[in-house]
Amino acid sequence: MAKQKLQRQEYVKFRDVKTERKLTVENAEFVAFLHSKYYKHSYYLPCSCSPKTWNQWIAQLNDVYDNGYRYKLHKNEVTWENFEV
Image 1 (tube, rainbow, N blue to C red):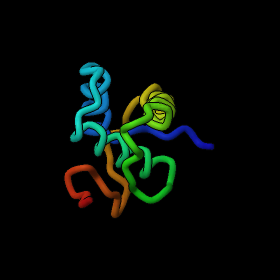
Image 2 (cartoon, one colour):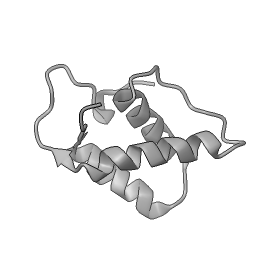
Image 3 (tube, one colour):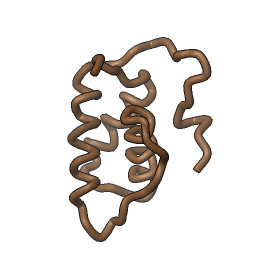
Image 4 (cartoon, helix red, strand yellow):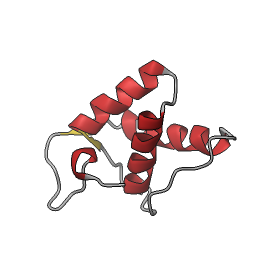
């Protein structure tokens, strides 16, 4: 898999989510959005009753986060700002 990079605004928001260390509803929706975007699956929210999936997703997103960020958007790229649940 090619090294993917978060878009700059996603990078900043994900850093803030990691700093909070609490998965609020808004943060959960954002993590689910990022995971669906970068791991190419349909958007859904895993059950909050078990943290296993959430922990796995966050660990996988940490790999993408560690690659840094990029400044330019790809053509027709979905962003958190224009994403509708």
